[in-house]
Length: 384
Ligand SMILES: *Cc1c(COP(=O)(O)O)cnc(C)c1O
Image (cartoon, rainbow, N blue to C red; front, side, top):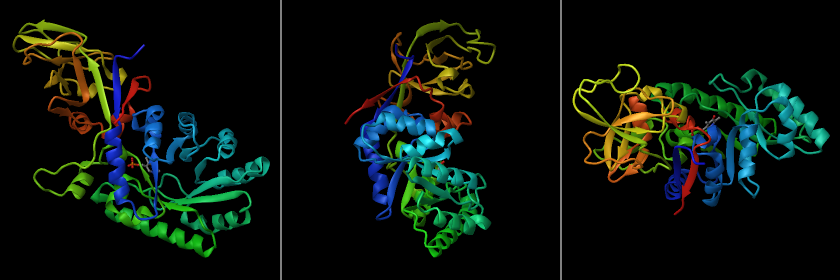
């Protein structure tokens, strides 16, 4: 049975975004599509085949579970990189399946050699360098030792990548820190080169670095948020679009989220709406309840402030968002019926609810809202 809301992915929007990204990609550089967090909430299952249909042949995920989902979603082999967690007992499967993975500690490197020997199959490693984010990555002082280890074990380790991750390339406040990271990464590249190591791909850029620091494209970029049609933050958008009066956003939102009116009710002046006393009707009102609440990813912080579209009109959330239900003030609409379409993200008539409007009403950022959309909401693809 379908859930109380559904998510629709737009193929034409995705094609548009791919084109935008590909046009800006440094010549010869490859594009890895980041689909961690269930493809930023879009759903790995529908998103990966759709992206593949539009030419995507390289995916980056956070963990082994996601890598497995990508494999399952496709019938043809593609390149996959795991950028984060691989548990010790999962490593054998990863090597067996030809999946690349970030390595940021020497124990992992040693285990890779042991397993590669056992499986008679080279392990596809991406050596992550610590350049300033201080999350994961080999410290600079250990780079010479790592490079020696890689040379000595070249028979077992396929050096697929040399990589790093930036600590906030979307914000000018981090400019100096990111510049220093780029310098450090270049040092690492030089050191590896001098040691006669030839990583297949050097990679560092996420969406923000891709846009703001074109020099970071190197051989491969790891693009997440941008492909889904969102800017890493407003600052990045302004830095690209400029401050013209009516900039046209070159990206298109891929996701649409829709539900239906569950019930319609009159409320008298002086009555409270919903749990507690957070909303008092100061006039005669009509409220529509919608079967979507915080358990479905509609944050409770949107209580009395979120927006939705009904019958082509923008309406506001009244009262607190419940676990499974929210209520909308539809007093200003001529007519509302049970079963009317409710757009939570997307377009209806000439009105639109963007994901960023959520971040304006709540503290959630794009990334968070999207990835909190539950796995079991049905995803459909609207093909071109
Ligand atoms: C999430 C992630 C990316 C992609 O970031 P976006 O801002 O969504 O483009 C790239 N690299 C790593 C290591 C990541 O964790």
